[in-house]
Image 1 (tube, rainbow, N blue to C red):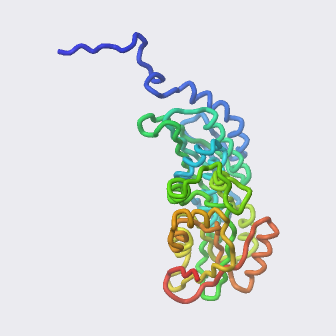
Image 2 (cartoon, rainbow, N blue to C red):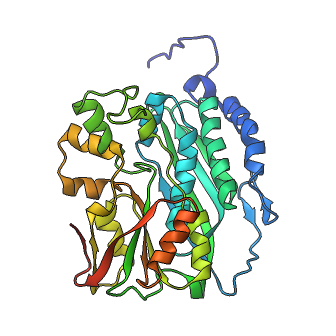
Image 3 (cartoon, helix red, strand yellow):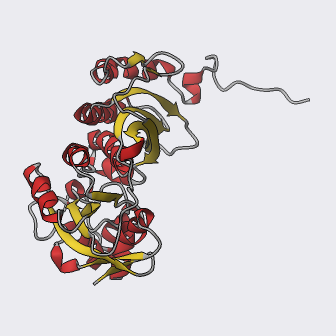
Length: 351
């Protein structure tokens, strides 16, 4: 029978095996005030408990809960290359808020998952502070989360950021409203960049094929490629939600995420209409043309992998579309009518 030989006189601990519980507790304490700043009177129990408690009292007449979950994907790798992580927290909150906005919901509370190989407290703090800021901006509570330190699952310095959200909408005001029909106008609202989709293709095109670094200046701009890529995902709640309360002429909303315009618009359209979009109605940000030229990517692939400068689509009664655009612009958005709904198959044509 063999004899086990210790390589050290020190006892084996969780920390020596690769997981530092003390650092996790320190990091959590450091962001506690930031998290609590998002609480409203509806938060009964937040961080520290085994579950978050939220008082279910709503002004809506017939409230329906709406939930969503998503992650920021390999944008985390670009953040690591640039050395800035605060945008990742905003990314995940704003992505989830936009998702439930597509059903007309306002956010109630948000929960996060932060995974890594070895917890670096300052990185964790940047991400959570970003989440807190984004939650406060839309009146949501950051009610809890999970921090997972898993050496051997994640590589060194790698992080993973995921979040889930719960919101509420009055049943009679939920979207889509079942009124999308030929003649409706398609309003595009500008994105702030890639948002949280397409980073695997973008990194391959720019860094592996194009030979760029995150420090290089994006051609035609005064911005670095790294800064352009980590621009936070834009949140549309504060500009769009008030319009939903004013009028029933906004028939549907699509968040342009993975799958781009081609795959996301059909999700909110009936089976007997198609969306016809005119590319000349907007100019995609420079980062998209650089990705395309660096990787020699076909145009149809660009419009499926990326949002191409359009972060949100509103399908609106054509007689009120110009008024909706004016209100979006007045609220600080860049918006325009970029096409129309026509009779046809449930697809998207970009001409």
